[in-house]
Image 1 (cartoon, helix red, strand yellow):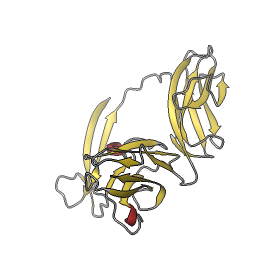
Image 2 (cartoon, helix red, strand yellow):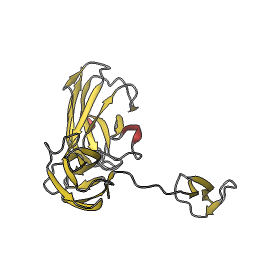
Image 3 (cartoon, helix red, strand yellow):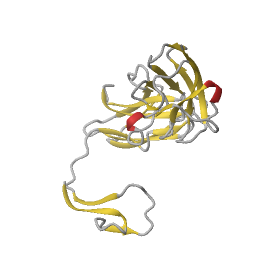
Image 4 (cartoon, helix red, strand yellow):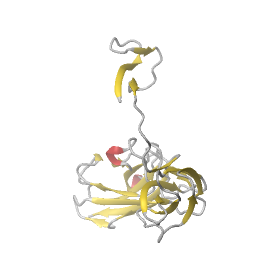
Length: 243
């Protein structure tokens, strides 16, 4: 691959911009590049049309298996072994093929698609996530009571896995996200939010390096909310106390 040209795209008023627009509505510029590519043979691979699905969606799986006469694609729980833990599978007699799997019967969570050869040996793997159609997130803390400056671990399951979901801590007497101010907070994807596929489950540690204030939390009762898409709609909550 060789880069032939790159241009900066953005607001027309900036002299450094190569391709300018009068109405540039983003706070980020873009880079438009032209490449010359020398194609190579596609290796053994299993890919998906998308990796985040809502329960009931179909996931489409593409496979390429040069030198393999019959390939099997199995769906297993995240990190699971095939065929021992397979939930469903399909086989193909073609080296290149496409299969579709229904997610209606899959619980919210992470899953792997595993590509197997004729002998049942794994030759490739990819991953996807299924989120619930309902925003009913199971939120918990590792303890119900903490000492001053103790780190608080917040975990969640069955999340909708929107890219900008976030966790916010509120005082128990002022815990309405649409009315009250949050204290400590963080995106469910952490510092990688927006750059990696979101997950339906996860955890974070609230401590002195967390965004927001104050730290340490003063003694009192608190509510931690799972909030949707960079807004103030709560989809789940848990309570804890600082002594």
